[in-house]
Length: 352
Image (cartoon, rainbow, N blue to C red; front, side, top):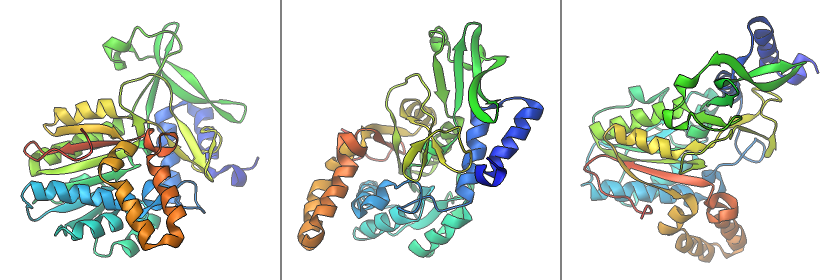
């Protein structure tokens, strides 16, 4: 396979590994996703995957109504900022803001986005938005209403594997021309939480420093400025072991080590750890619920029937989209919704 077919990043990685030795899984995933997202619009039928806002307008509408409800019960403070991390094509923001406007919420809009390809699409969907590379430049003069859908899962994970001689970082090396995961040589026991060090040989522990940093910053801003946040992603609510690294290309799962930079690399989000990170910053953890439970609690079934009555010719497609979002065998159980709020803000619907 030549470089043009295999991808320039794969060739770069091979040279790096040949010259300096294996690279960490975190390095591999971070570089691969940086290349991937900078070069394309990955969403939709012509892309590699579809997110919940692209499946149905109901998803974004209910996010917008949840944020509006929180804002109203907090006293409708002004100014207020809608902040979205990784807003894709702007579909979630467009639908959420349209729904929120019906209840008087018209926030300033801020997108945290690095892809110039996606920024052009976001501008078309939400004219007047402001763009940022991270949360540090988002204004501090009012509460934040923050949404992050399928953002944390793409941040690079660090993996540790238990060997006969203790814990080692999981690395990416070469077997001929193929990339393969291997154990590193440096002892890493000190990097593993003490209560997990006695795990059986072969155990893999996965952490995501980037996700922890994002939630740490967001929770601190909520505690300082007021507001509420929703982090929505596929993940788990209790700490567990094992590698969850996977890749999607053209709507199919593929080998994550086959073509770096040419597929979307993701890992399941550890919501249990992130809840503790948020609490450490003084924010309130409202709960972590399955996406299906949360959407049903917010009224997706009633909204589905309302849309079916308005457009009976599309009723089958509308109900199919609802099922994809809420059913346990589809996105309803695997995807989770974590709610955060400022210390004196109210509880949020859907987390009881």
